Length: 299
Image (cartoon, rainbow, N blue to C red; front, top):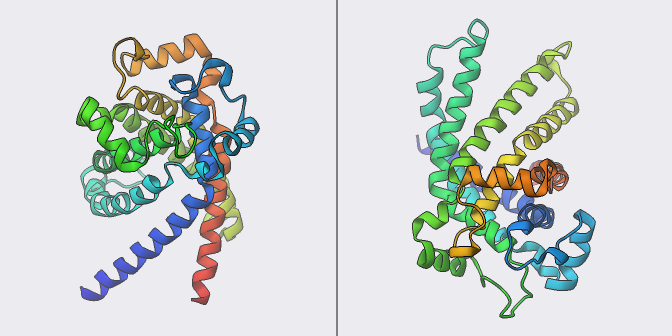
């Protein structure tokens, strides 16, 4: 039992270090993605100052806010990994027993498919309950386009962000967009599970597939699932931008209103702003993790 606990602690810490490296390396791409997603709902970015795309964003961020601002919100993102992993580890088997107990995936595929979505959604929602304020803070800090160490900054850091929102809106303010986040998790899992199973089924010998092919399939599936569920991510980030606002400053009265206004005022393409940088971020993160695994062999 003690050996198992030590082994888990080692894996947990190794995973944490890998995640911290991975997230920090791709943090600039993540910030570009978030800015493109939420700029329309930002009080700091006027219509004539909005970013035209990924390149424009990458060029202007260091000029206007300083090079280090590429990593705004990264600390909250790194911290978030540890409780998320611990909670996933604690809950995933419990939910699998509830939703998938006694289900044969070969003879009861659709029950297995539905159970997988339900268990993934439930585990994701449970984890989100605890870590959502960190995800919220990461988004708001990344969306803050004020110059470094100046009064134009909305928040000075993670603690300042959470304190200000709590004083203004209470705990509810930190959970704006929670419902649509859970919907996004279920859509992501449905896309991932469906596409991955289909892709593997098309291989001549799924069990003896070369690691490079498996990695390419995983990358493709992750990209497809990410794009399919991306509109939900855009809506939840826009809802996060509502916290701390009063009266006429409130853009969306709720999630449904947010969906409607984005579609009406900005067009369907607006739901996918920053989606390309999201795909690039996923590829970059996977590459860093592969390098980390190689490095671990020599340590």
